[in-house]
Image (tube, rainbow, N blue to C red; front, side, top):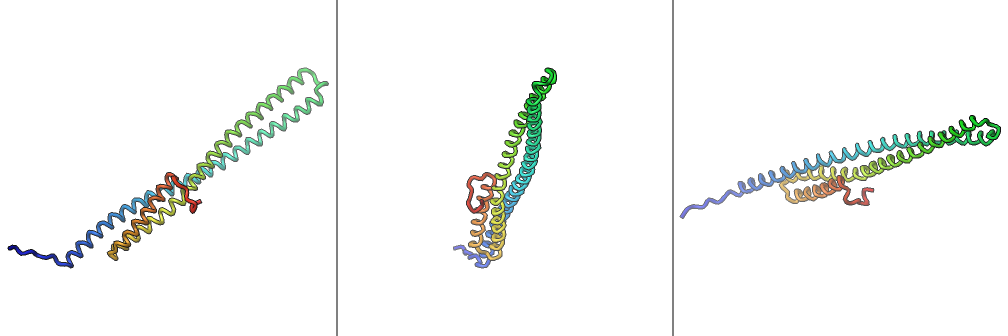
Length: 195
């Protein structure tokens, strides 16, 4: 009968520890990749939010300039109308036609500026909407980053402590962080905590 050699318990424990360490190390690397993706999403959302805010501010300034020009033309038209009413009967036909042509041109310019203003307002509101969407995304990315960082730290601690419980906690933190990251990209759900 052949002799069966029983493994040394210390060697078994060491082998088991190495396998656990490798698994946790690979998982930690995966957490780091998720953290990088989350960080990229948060940075992008913040940049897009700031850019949309700046562009909407520019559009509102442009809107205001168009409104001022519209009111200027309207004021000039009112003055010309008043002058025509005041002196209309005593004016030469040529002067009256000139006034009427100017009044018509001022009215057209007023209408053009009013139409331009409406287009600019639509663009500004669209940019404000983009800003608000990106502002809503930002907290999800921030909390996802925190949870993924906690997952990385607790996974590292689980190696030192050889504790599967701490490792499982890191998996829970990473899972929650991943869900928040995905929600940050797609805004599938709006949580009241992040409003």
